[in-house]
Image 1 (tube, rainbow, N blue to C red):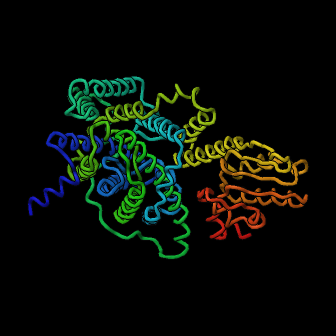
Image 2 (cartoon, rainbow, N blue to C red):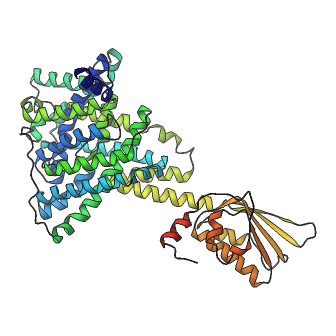
Image 3 (cartoon, rainbow, N blue to C red):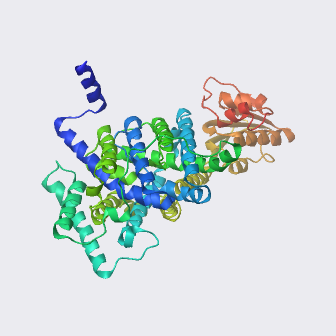
Length: 524
């Protein structure tokens, strides 16, 4: 029995004796970085700091165990906190807990419906903008630590205190940079935190510390049902917030999943991550947490510290719980400058510096999308930026593709038949150009349209073919359609009898087929 349990453990946490210590130290480093972030996001949402810490522990633990990628870190995030603030201000924290539970249920449904796979539609230019914008947001959020009490509405530190704070931040960054050159057995961020903490405590330097933000001391979270009326009115209050939070959480989590996957060269399970995020948020709602999603900054810290398995993320959650239960006096003495230095190194490592060099080399539309997503991320939030970027990239793609439809014409030997050989996709964006390729008034009595090198994509394309056939028939001319897919055969009505069947007809799926069957486009 002992060997069987051991095998289960090592199958789930594939580790060697050397990597075991690296994974645990990576988890400790992440936990230290999670504390000020969770407190700060709790302040943003207008709730008690322990609400943010509980969320970081519960969400971090559950997603570490069942999430779509080993080593990815989840917890309370700023992207969700800015949405929660109005809910808490208007209705109170109990409605927040209920909203987080409903948010989690939605995410579970999204996961079972396998909607996570649609993240593959996010173009690379949007990913670059997402990464760059997030790096800037992380950097800007650290500036609050240079204020008295680390609050948004506080004043900046005095000149001497500010210089000392900056010096310690710079010292942390130097230690992090030098550590890998000396040893790789200790995560560089952890070394930076330890060195600066030792310097501050040994020399008694008066600088802001974690305890100056809020106390992290607490007890194990209790299970209880949110105290709100179970009514339609309550549901109508929390439903819009839950949907927005679920969407933002999944978008940020799935983009982080892809980004970390590119770094470690491993694929992740998008739908599995959706379910894991949902289960985690349902649980944290019942244990008094504010909800959350994947955290790209802490995930980067984990990966850069050597965390590659689920053990690093699991241990970070338990270290965080340990901080709350028994180690709060020690954690509260850690200088914020050390943690700010760690996050600044995350910013440097996250920002895609190469994207600046390639902006002149890539298509102008892609360059604009990257800049647009970066700007919108900084100005609003990640989810809005990604949606805006995907929409613009899709429109740009449709516009460019629409210009590529063309035709090559020829006449039969007797001059009585004109053949149009189409080249390029026929869809809503190219329909106008498609119509301009033909000249029904001057064409001979017989016309053949060959779709061998073209593809009919949607309902607009089918309608354009119908209209073209009607024009020729009204002029008393014969038109024949060749090499259309079987979907087109079934969906074309007026022009259906004009199709010439052939053994080499293509067999691609037509988007309009789904629309007609479901009644979206109606019937012919």
